[in-house]
Image (cartoon, rainbow, N blue to C red; front, side):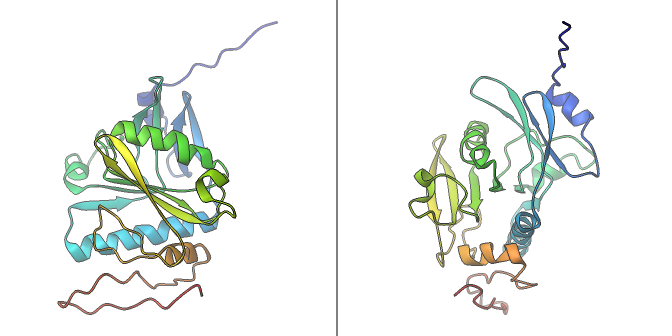
Amino acid sequence: MTTTTIKKLTFEEFLAQYPEGSGRYEFVNGEIVKVEATRAHKNIARFLVFAFNDEIRRMGLDYIVDKDIIFRTVTASGEERGRNPDVGVVSAFLWNSNVLAYGAVTEPIQLAVEVTSTNWDDDYLDKLDEYQRLGIPEYWIVDYLAIASRSYLGNPKIPSVFVHQLVEGRYTTQRFTGASHIISPTFSQLNLTVEQVFAAQYNLNSGCRPQAKLDKRRTHHTCPDIIK
């Protein structure tokens, strides 16, 4: 019997062979892995891109938000991985330091958001550990389907947004549900509820953006209550 051994790629080979224009991919266990997402999943990610971008512009922050920011992580065993979060916020200075580059960002991004799917343990366990090791200051897990185990979501399970903030090299976690406003260390004046984020899966926000905290210098439009 002949055994065929598939050569595992390096991170640099992953970048060189990245399939352009056909979806999102990550680098796991030496292989290129396609990241599949439902339309609801994509709607939530898109809503957060808009929300963060509005806040960046309103506050004049030195950030860029995008859905295709790839960066290298390392597991506890030393394995290289390439991650591409659903939403990424990165320093504009870092991003623009080499605008002609195709490759991954080599420094920790400011904020990563993962919208949870059926492989929820990747977000709650693997990526949390990798992002903490890399030193990403803020990491959101958006579990709109309440798909994780009861040890995370309680009994009965409640859809939740978890915000992890890096403090002295370790993540501290806040959980937000229902009508509660999400507290973001990166966007300290962001006025966004969990209900608004979850309503985006059905595109119910339909052009309505999260209202920023009161700013007397300009007029803000308020989103209607989506979920009663």
